[in-house]
Length: 214
Image (tube, rainbow, N blue to C red; front, side, top):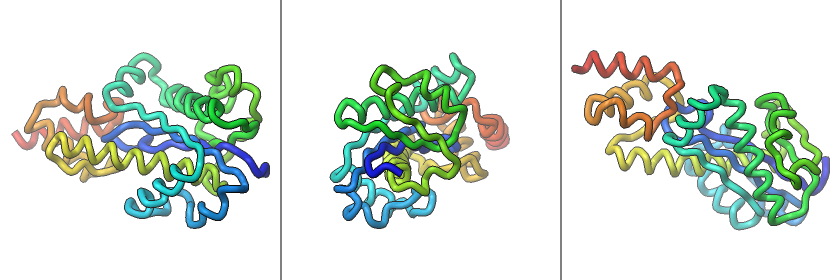
């Protein structure tokens, strides 16, 4: 494994509410001591994730690409393919890092055919070696990217919830359905475009629950 590499990961892909966030983080030997404790964000509580995010952003070159719900829904309507959005977002995050630091090795989670990601990369990005692997978060650079992406997702989800006057849960479970139904009952279904990913099957459950509250 190269000592210098860029890790890239996403957050919000499986969450009905909130944005899709992709982050890339460059890690070199000079960063290792300060990144102690960084691991896959799925193994961290929100508070720990937010605290580690501050460290990573202070220590490492990083890039965040956040696609808010309104933009996400517009893009998904055009592409009808989540992997296309992921490939585009990963490519932009990688390219942003390459504008600030020279690196020729990138590791990403194997979310799709890696050729799709390579097609979205521009000139600098096409010169890197891209490794797409299962459970890539076991690598420190990808784990750092997962923390930055998740922390950004958490902050943006909270901000959306504050604007709506509702605590927006993560995921796509029954708590999410109940929160969505309460929003629809209070403000109408059209507001969901600004808060949620409308291609999720969860939307039908939300609307059904909202009708039961009428």
